[in-house]
Amino acid sequence: MKIGLLSDTHSFLDPHILTVFEHCDEIWHAGDFGSQEVIDRLREFKPLKGVYGNIDAPAIRHQFPEVLRWKVGGFRIFMTHIAGYPGKYSSKILKALSSEPCDLLLCGHSHILKVMKDQRLGHYHINPGACGHEGFHLVRTVMRFEIKEDRLLQPEIIELGQRGRLPISP
Image 1 (cartoon, rainbow, N blue to C red):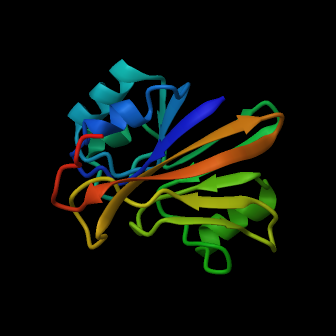
Image 2: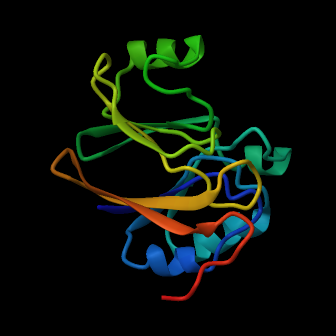
């Protein structure tokens, strides 16, 4: 299964994302959609999984959970918008991870791109950074990867351009 991962669109969906995710089977959004228009456009394009973020209005919070757990084959996925990072998880997240381990934790919120292995808990931790224009990040990013035979394969970071500027066409 090929996945396109993004977070922190903050009401802006870069049109280049649709090209970047063209060959993905699903799109996963780790919160802070910002608007119904972003959700609708992503749903029209590909199957969408997501969680709400701290800026999302009640209408969005009614469509998406705060925490989402599911499996791709036997690969266990945990997604939430605000998680922290290995060694610095909130007590709520640490309790959830301890009671029901995962193989892949996906989050957003910090606008800081992170792809790392949590050595203590044994899962991959991915924050795709932010792809909207709001926030302090300098470069807008999304990710692609594949899950095959219970393994995470080919994680790829895609830079969309500087915050506040549209990308240059390839």
